[in-house]
Amino acid sequence: MIQVRSLVKSYGGRRAVDDLEFTARPGQVTGFLGPNGAGKSTTMRIILGLERADSGTATVNGRPYAQLDEPLREVGALLDARCTDLRRSGRDHLRVMALMGGIPVSRADEVLAQVGLETAAGKRTGGYSLGMAQRLGIAVALLGDPHTLVFDEPTNGLDVDGIRWIRDLMRGLAAEGRTVLVSSHLMSEVEDLADEVVVIGQGRLIEQSGIREFIDRASGDRVRVECADPAALAIALRASGAVTEPERPGTLLVNGLSRRQVGEIAVAQRIAVYGLADCLVSLEEAYVRASRNSLEFSTRDQEVPA
Amino acid sequence: MSTAFIEIPRLVRAEFVKLRTVRSTVITLIALTVPALAAGLFLATRLDPEPGRPVNPEHLALTPLVVAVFLVELAVIMLGSTVLTSEYHSGMIRSSITAMPRRGRLLAAKLLAVTLLSAGFGLLLSLVVLAVSVPAVQAEGFEVPLTGLVPAVVLGVVLYLPMLAVFSAAVAAVVRGSGATFTIMLMSVFVLPNVIGFVPWAGDWLERYWPPAAGFEVVLHSDKAGVVSPALGYAVFALATALLVAGANQVLQRRAAV
Image (cartoon, rainbow over all chains, first blue to last red; front, side, top):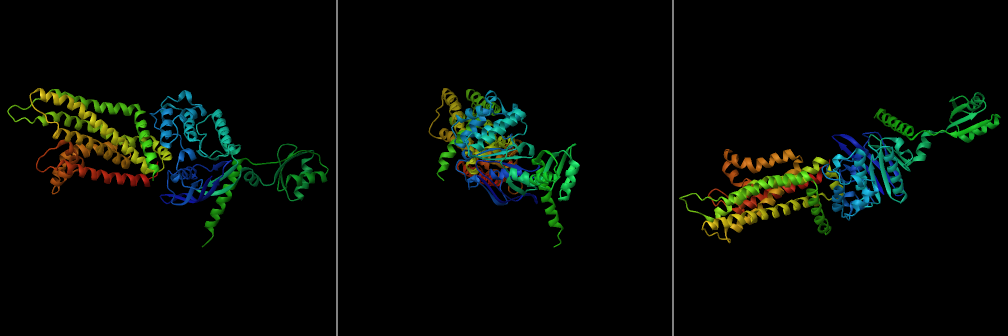
């Protein structure tokens, strides 16, 4: 479990992380979302003890990272892939990490196989493609078989197969009961992966919730209905307070009424319905709406005269 | 803090593996070492006492070693600084700190690793050069006592080189860049000792106590007026190094691992 409480970090007067608060729980993939520069990487670096917070705490299983007895056995981390000496081979890098972390050196070859890097293990990491470097970083994260994993933009530089592989890996890790925190600025990447989302903007928490709730809430009551007489149905729906717009011929988009209400109105009007479904926005659209709302709040706050 | 006794030895081993597994480091160290050794051995085979002056057989046998040590200082500076500069340069420092977030232990292990390596190397260099020079002096018909100055200088080499390595590592921990570190070290060890005496007012004092030069007295045993004794010189060097290490530790603790 990762707990971030009242975390603040400034650089030269600019708040990169601003009173941030969230929890990543075991057994779930927690997506850590926000645009570039929102403070995701800074937060992760603080979680991993690479940087000091100005105030607030970030703990793993109740303790700050720097106080963990065997950090590599408790937390596996993938930060930016380039934190290896490019002149050293992938296998040697893993051996060095294992030695420093008090992990049997034999684990190096096990994780190399797990990430599919056996054939490149003897090559200098400077010759690795971005995808290979990313796999090596994941191998390091898995070295200590940790219960908590922190991945910063893990799909960077990976091809389609690589992205699929890493999603399956993360889902598998969470299914084993581990805590998985994964950051991304690409919402579509996280949409089918995360169970929970932590959305931040300008260093502040915008929302933490289950991904389904998050999308449902952003979607509001928006229903797509396909029927025999859209024009007539539209009139009836508007009479009930809905806003409608035609989509394709024979299809209406209805805002402001639930699926159930639309169905009942159609029956009352004796209009045949061929299709009726909630119209959910994408995670990306949900994110845009949530961040727009939070931005409006913050500007409105500032406009209130003192 | 009993875990330190478990963690530091494995961190030291990791430092050895880090050094060994980067081929360019190994090649550079060898390239800087071989000429020093070659020069020592070459001089050891061509001892020519100045004619007409009283011969000091101990000095005759030790001169090749002192020259070799002087030349091998470059390799030791390189060894000491590379354990930190290479990590900052590559970003490996982030990996190291996630593996060992108790940064003081990481630094201690690095210093211990370069200490052990340069002490072992200093001993080896001394024995190899003396194994050639002492018999050569004896072959000229002189007696070389192996109880006085000779073991004192060997001990001096084994004390001086590790301290130089630690000094370099501490500078590197603060400065981070290899170019800047190397420049500072070359200035401190090779350039400043020759010019610092020209500083007005304090020149004599600075020349006497400039730490790397004072420390080298433990190898040189000059025994001249105006020069510190080996013990005092080494103590000055050790004190300066200790202060630098304390500073390096502070910086490492506070700085973000970028």
